[in-house]
Image (cartoon, rainbow over all chains, first blue to last red; front, side, top):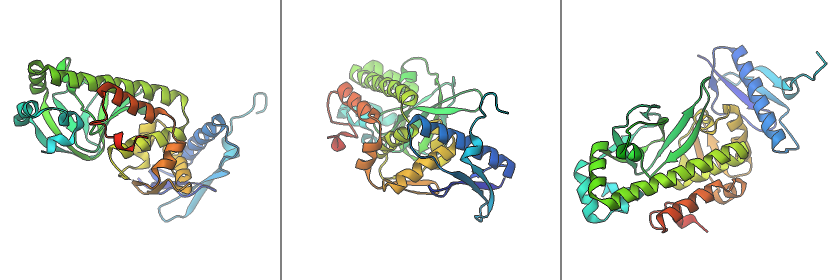
Length: 79
Length: 241
């Protein structure tokens, strides 16, 4: 399985990476991670959260990005 | 005497240790090896000289979280040896090291003959329960960042400055996704507390980590001192303020 790296923009690079079947799986992992990090930051009363998450391959090539804004849950009444 | 590198065995007098020695063997603890599965019989007792043995609770759906760690300050398998022999959770070697190992039957016989030895094992079980209770409170109430700092302090006391740990493993211990650990590790690195490279954490400034950690590590250490009623044998005593 290929190894994907989930870097956190403004914070730093992911040295370890994770083995996942494809880019779509890496994107799902990035979304779930972003939600968890965001939730922890909100609960801790943090003023700032990372802007986005970058998905790269082993060579460092950028494959996809996940904006923190896109991972927020939808608001009731607004589709 | 390699056995005395374990703090429980080091507390035994010469006669008591001499009674155990013929049946104690020194083994390697390879990283990732599973010592017991949930509800599996435990046939051996491990007294680590270094490294870390983790007790991990696994939930349906693939979640897992560490609920207790055993290092040179304790033993794995002693309560099972004295009574039921069954492990109540998944027990895995988290950081490699060595340990003195003895069969459960030998431990039970020795504990029957030497009340002082039985008392020592029971004392450690009391401490272990206190540690697990503190961990339950900590996991429910404290942030991932302060829990990670607490966890690094404990690892530093039991292992030292260099911790051979992947973020994946650490995430499982903390019960979070790997990238949450990446986020915390990057912040600690920026603050000058640790250096992180693939599969390795180097502790740079333990006092700064202590400032960011919750109180749980200090509380666990004070339980250890209270239960053993002395600083002797407490791996954390020399660093205590």
